[in-house]
Image (cartoon, rainbow, N blue to C red; front, side):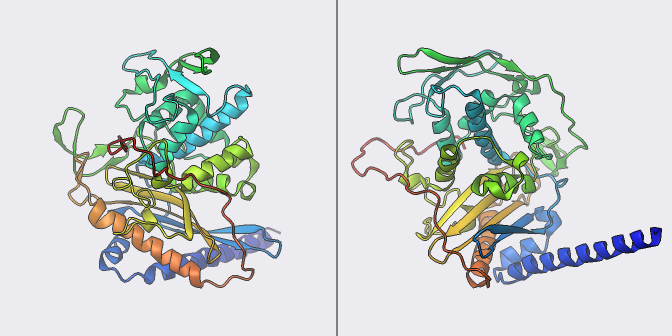
Length: 430
């Protein structure tokens, strides 16, 4: 009996090995089509550039139901990359979930939200000059966080959800790599555990809902030290000979980011526990601003030269800074400390192809961390453009058993008012 069990396990392991090898062959085959010497150099040095790539193929059955296959290269949840602005994506999802679960009809994503200063170094917020009514709201924070990846909206969503619930909720949903403990405010560990008192108010400033200041008492298991680089600049602007310590920085795996995005684009494709609990209207709102361009948006009115259409579409950035009209990319990006990350769902409604592509890499040839001198323009962005094009071209030629007719779930995007003479926004913290 034991022999039969061992034999069964052996055959299963052989099948699994062959399946993984075949998947690796697919992703390597696509990448081998790249002729650019710089991109080939990155691909030949996975340890130096710390790159991870997930290509998610979408095939539909005869009933039109999508099925997903992930092809991974160098993907390792234990290989740290700094997620930077990527954490704005789950914070947007969790903010809408919290509003939905509050179940207060007068309190929604468009309701004005005011922040008090309740602890050391906290910053109050009662006005948002970039919104139509000059008031802050969760909806406007999400727009600002997605359209060009502004930083303060992340801080405000962090303060609304709270450090404890951010981490508890994501863990409960099965996103086990999650550890989001820091705002983008230069706070200490203690200050990050404290979040502001918050009030939702109506047009007459009458309080509709009040949230007291919060403090997270949960502990965090940070694990083994994460030390990167040869030298770094510290918070006192001093050059320190020795690696930069990322151990207590935010940390989410590439696989978890990919699953989070998939859970919003295709909710029924993931288990119920991995989904976020908000309305279909909320989901479509998220999809709109994950894919809308800064040039289409009136509020905020971003300067189109500085914040061009492909500004946060790393897989499609080129010298024209434009985007193909037949393509919409639903995505979130992050860049900091030499790490560049993009997690995308790509939809082409003319050629009827769609797929997901997620990648991260590290570009810091001088080995000095926190000096604002990275190889993003010369290595990072061109590499992401090259692999983005490689997978797009592969999708154009890939045989599908059932060719779908695809439609954008976002029925209508905003249009910039050509008569709007307000000054455009050229400088932001992102």
